[in-house]
Amino acid sequence: MKSICASIPAVAVLMGLSALLLARPLQAQQSQSAQPKQKPIIVVVERTKAGLQYRVDSQPAKDLLHSLSVIERRRGPDCPVVALLYPRVPVEWIWGIEGIAAKAQLSNVRVFVVFPDTGKMSEVRLLPAVPYSTNPDINRDPLGIR
Image (cartoon, rainbow, N blue to C red; front, side, top):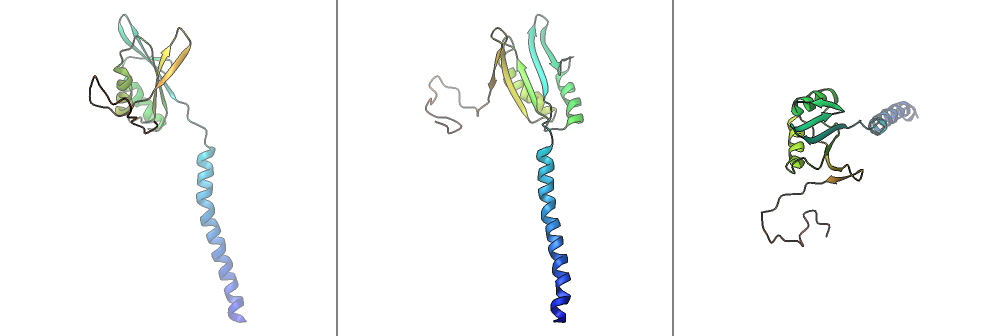
């Protein structure tokens, strides 16, 4: 009888410790999911008579890489970036904006083409490159959707 009574407190302590250990990861998950979504960095690229004009969070930016790097240091590499490209911006900027953001250590980038006449915009999703051809395989879907 003594050995059973002596082991009850030990079992209770072990159960309490295991409950604490199991509760910690759950609390960490809840606190991460309870964190508000981070406000995105808004990058606007327009073509003017003087060349390309950049605005980062509504502020003019002469050096886009520097501006994004400063924000990345404050807000971290996972901070979302929304790039708005106006129609007169060269098509290469669809890839260029992601490259500049990557150099600034920002990895969460979404690119949109803005249509100011209609008040709409469309997201551009970059897919893997395929070899140049005038006869590409139109039945092949790089994402496997079709």
